[in-house]
Image 1 (spheres, rainbow, N blue to C red):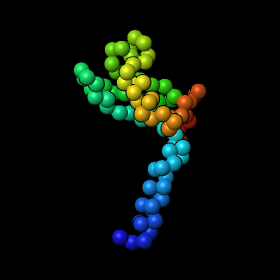
Image 2: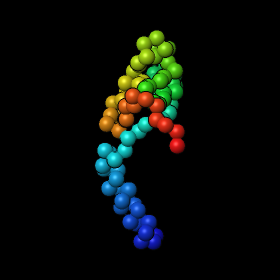
Image 3: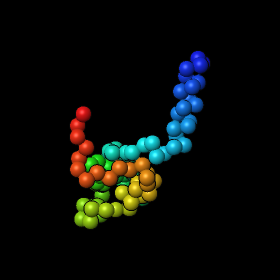
Length: 84
């Protein structure tokens, strides 16, 4: 392994310990619930889930769990992030 990649690996380890460097603005995931798998998304500062509970209340155990998992890395957006 060359020295430049070793430096990058060390930097990646350091970055991974500094979670405040990352702000997640959007993502999609599959959440394995007790009864089914659900597509969960975070975009434009808002959560979305395809489960029936979310459809009527705009919150569910899947989105609340993801909020707890990702905590300070989520970026709440008042307005959509402009396209680059």
